[in-house]
Length: 282
Image (cartoon, rainbow, N blue to C red):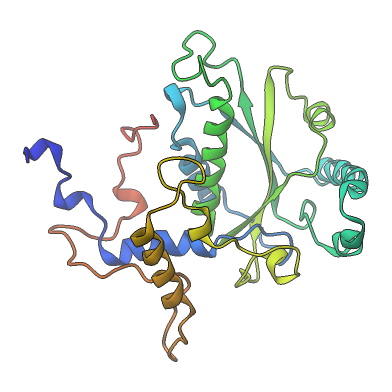
């Protein structure tokens, strides 16, 4: 196979770096409680926003903006919007689950160190609709990728993030003076936390459970049967994760298969990345 058709060995992460990536993914939590009064240093927040800004975006449109909200009075007004929206949502919940719904902690707007509203400017790529002609919602999806980048980077920094989705969008736009062509995508509570829960809060409190992944894998078409070896591999990872841990086992996710580290590979450091040249294209 031609050399330019294969990835260089040095392009891979070594074992420590791979484990760190998977750990961030498997221990990321939607934090609603456990926030501490500790402030977030601007240097840390800058790293999180830079990670978000290097998310993939269709057509390299980079449609996101980040509104940092620190003012206590403004956050109290946002929490009032949440409380109003929550009462409006309650009748849509199955009657037998309404009592549990009322008990759930679903936001940390005022308890967290700060809030960030991530928005999508839907006119930013108006003159260059690459990738949006047939899928005009791709700017919104790209913005969600920025939210995920922010979230995973925050977990690596020991910072908790909670996404508050129970807010009426028009009311939030009015409160934050967001222009008509800009869509608020995510309202995030951000702060240091006393702990990251071992499981999602909604799973712990009995609201839902993680769906079995093999049941979600299809072959060739929707409802297509097959991919038995792949489903078996998933089941094996789940068995490894469920196995009793030893006294020194810090496992938080299915183990990453051991491989020989690539030559010249080392754990990635933030300062080693050429962020100016990093591609944000899809």
